[in-house]
Length: 494
Image (cartoon, rainbow, N blue to C red):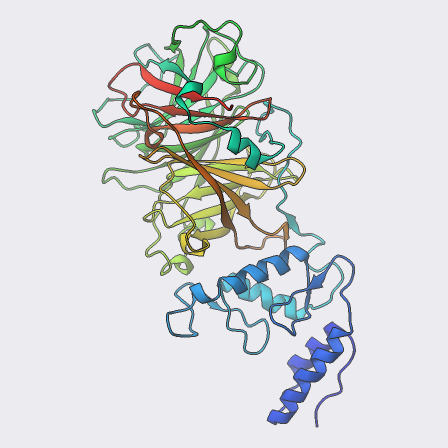
């Protein structure tokens, strides 16, 4: 005898999991009756049907339904060829009987939790974690990402043409202001990334990261131009800038202990996020060094490291769950992008160097950058990109926020062909507290930078700067440190 169905979604799922019908006819009848009964119900305010399948009426947030739809779209790519079995690192979602969409183990656990609490008021909202990016910060605010009005339009105006290119220089020959300096210089030592500070008193400051040969010799240069002032827009248009190329020899140097490869950098006002690891046969745990640079505008200041995210098992970065889809996961960090969420927490994307096939999304556990810890939000795989999506071995990745929509974009720079590509970050607007989620990228557009014949290249130092007039200015540097001064090219928007 089949059980009597009740009319609420939650009652159905509780009853359905408790009742085991032995006859095939009973199971079929249950499925049909459930579909009819649940189709007549509606979710509580703020929730929608999950729709993992045509008869899936579990109530979830709109963002979760969007994520489920993305999982359905990726289903075929996550299966083994010619089989319903999942690739290594994925399992069947099992949102309903027969659901063989392949997802991460974390997502299956979340799905089972949704089934157990179907229809509960506020499920996934109260006490949840918003992933909406803060977009109302003023230009130059410490630790904040200044937003553009329309990112795609601004990227289209950002030019790589030689007629909007202007030249600057950096010399390391002088003594560092803070007394620190690299131990040795090797012919293969080179610049890896560029970032520009912003805010009153900092608009002529910049960061260059240094890839060295010796352990503990990698680090960051923080330079400043005293020859001209700037309001935060492209340096070319500073009112008192002379027509000759400015070269500065005023700088601080900060070594990254144990590491020899300082990689991609992102600047939020005067807060710098720097990726670092070991290169050239050396081994170490990769890390994201976070630096307070506010003291560098004084004649004799200092650089303060205020936080460190180590890419290791303590944050789940090297979990065995990740092995298989990209091969063995190693502690490597080529670049980092950073932004701040509406609740004050920070979000990071760390591009790994597992043959450029993967990376990590991290979220801070608190809103104080000096004391916060970090937790893994998602281990991202290149295989999750839509077929045909261009992706390169980016040496610099910078987040860009969009005011109004709250969207988050990422700019990738750093190839020998001088490419610059824009992606939109795709993720739910809200997730359950302390939960993981799946994050992906949508390719928007790409462009090149004409750096000839200056011998500068995005592969060896590049970065983007958002101006107070809400435009994108791009910087590209020369590779070597042996030739002095280091060439810096600025490409302003049209």
